[in-house]
Length: 516
Image (spheres, one colour):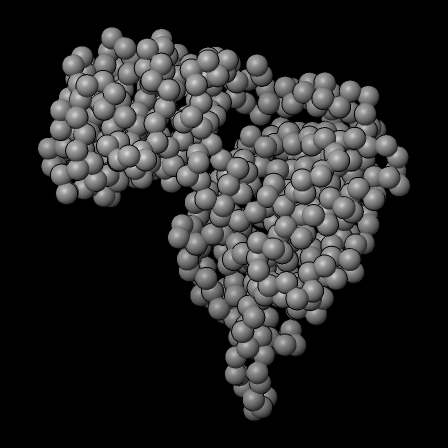
């Protein structure tokens, strides 16, 4: 058992869109949380020595034939349980209560009255706005349970079984729209589950250094870096753990930003003291991507070639048995490597869904349990500069997923120039630090334009900018019109082959942050 995970909150994932948000909210309180499959048995849960269990929401009805369920022995374990939405329905259903569909659901904001005198509602108002998302509702309260919250529509919004230390809410406390959801979660985590705050950057670093040393032993580690936040923090962490047994390699696949390879090498060597070896593999990558349009296929090709290139390069350096990667928790989630069987593959990340079956390296992924903001906190603790830490995220497959359609050297070159201009204007105007991620996209569409009194028929560039905390959800950034105008003008006037610029105003969901 990892030392930091002894205070863990285990979350059973029943397919809710908010499950990962539950995990993030708990970690914000410096308590480790882990999402697991609802098929997990009690024995396996106890091996994790959890302080509490949370049953997530989900799209199913408990009385459906294919409704996901869990090991009923959990109900008899001496472990506090919080059921949220579908989790509430499960607790009611398995404790002799009744859940039914009335044909009337509650979606969005709802006003809820709370019964005071319960630990779970300490320091909460008598009445508060919450976020609802359900069709089914409780029609019979189980014996031994007490209603502690009721919506304005008369729906049971909260239940408690004091004797068994079980609580359930119809609403979603993890969603920011629930005004006092954070307080309810804090009450559950600290007053009921009795957790301690030990999920901190410094503690995380100490434990990972120990784990990396134990796993690698006397073996050398080949570290793949890209210049992005994730790979930079990962490289620093591994370098701190094993020193000169760590060899950093930057593969230039031709899909990096303008001057990215050189800037990355300089930053890691001069700024962090990490020796980096640069290999130009661009011709090979472009060759394999020729004629490929499907985004999933592109991601898998890039991932496969990365590993093949590392294989060959490792042989040049000597015997390397381990590969270090900057894989994050959202990468795993979006690639469908999730706890829930109902999870969908949103997009394969080259370092997760794109890995070949015959991988010859043992993987060292010290950041795989972290969200992006946690990675930045770890990087800051490691002494990495803010310039590197707060750099916008950049996908592992690089511009290969920002060139929509076929990826060619010429199309990548156009996008590199457009992206460079975009970033320069954002930094000059002070907008860069207000944005979580911004980038340009080359769209496989040509439009008619007029330049110098002559008709043009050239490429379309789309601009994307979002605000986010962890990359799981995002809002499009309200870019000042004068800044957009300057960006558009500079791109069209300075890049041959582009005559139109558009701005993406789609949030996540329904869109993703990247276009592919």
